[in-house]
Image 1 (cartoon, rainbow, N blue to C red):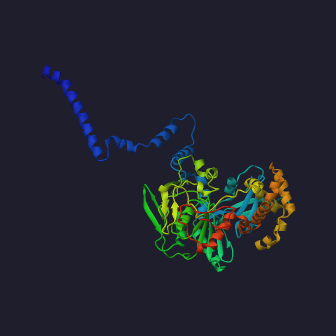
Image 2: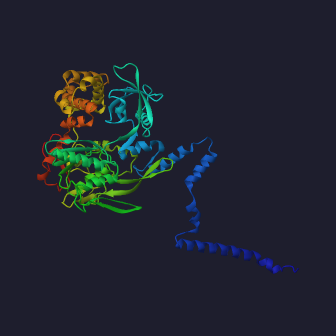
Image 3: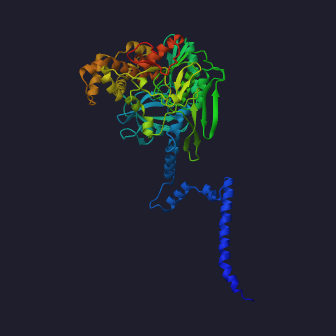
Length: 562
């Protein structure tokens, strides 16, 4: 074998170096080619890398203590969604039914309304025709035991008690009840069933021609409920509609679209949605609406959100009717729900919705979630609730309706007729006891103690005409309040007397006749309702405002002002 020449060994290092340099050069060229094709080789492995699962795996394998896998995963999901927007949320499996049932129009349970009072569950009403009524439960009964579990005097909360009482249709639950004038605990075996829930709280004739409907949410059954309510009111002579959306935080988008469709002409825009991963979708009226000729006024406040704002925006932007009340919440984000295999779900914001003129009424959410959901206090502090002129409108968010009205985006629906909050110093005592829930508390205790007497009233009309809050009842209330460490001057107490008597009568009526008894009495002193009713009466003669400011009504004024 011939030995290598010495010249070869001299050039060997140079040859190796050239090979390395060539390899590096070719590598860069390949990356450059890949980058031109939008798939850099350096990112191939990166796109497959799952950082979250890597961290989870590391924790499960090496953390010093035992970790609950499901709990950690749930917390991680909640953390991710929390950083997106205030309305994207994770629904844990154990909370799924509680969150979704109100929107489905029904749940499976025993069919009662109850209140936890003095650490005991007291039945306020049994649902007519429901399992509890059929089994013999009565208003005023105290539920002290559910199956083998004691639920009285043990500090149970509403949420846990509801979970114990709910269950699949056909399943049975044993209820132990204490009833006045009965010996010992009465046992009832109740077979759970489907219990309907309603989004229409109450519907009645406000006068000979005006019908009133209060809508609490937009559920799967809302459209059908509204149709039924309107038909019943028309049968009673309704010619104009007052729709109350105060405190209605929304629900199903499609339910709002279907309701708005009933009031608008063919091809009028109801709402449109658009998001980064969702192309624009426009909802228009089909022209088959049953209420196209029905004059309408809508009442809103700072608790009206989402689907409520879609309805108000569609009516306002199409110059179809007037909006009365205070500026709405300002939620213009659309969520879609993804149900997960373990029974949990996520609601992810996928789009923004826009009113027919093109305005987004979503308010800013760059602050913390608590400030976002409780900006009522900021509105109070900046004087908006006393005078809408304190609201600073941004000209870049100005829009004009087909009829020439100026409307604004960027933070809720601004009403056409603004009704300020009530700031009457004479009602200071009333405001204190009302905000602390003491009027409701006393009315509940009074109803419970006087149930036999109150049940003698045949109907709400009999009650309204013949039941009075006497001086003795009012003085008993004042004594009750004094035991709750509420101090006030006699002048303040007397200044609030009439309003407190009125509210006591309304709350007692609710305990006997439910919302059908409460609202007709309550509205006698509800300034927003009274102004909306007056506005609707004059709707035919009102020229819709075209200036940037709404018609403003304060508690001291009696007429519309422009």
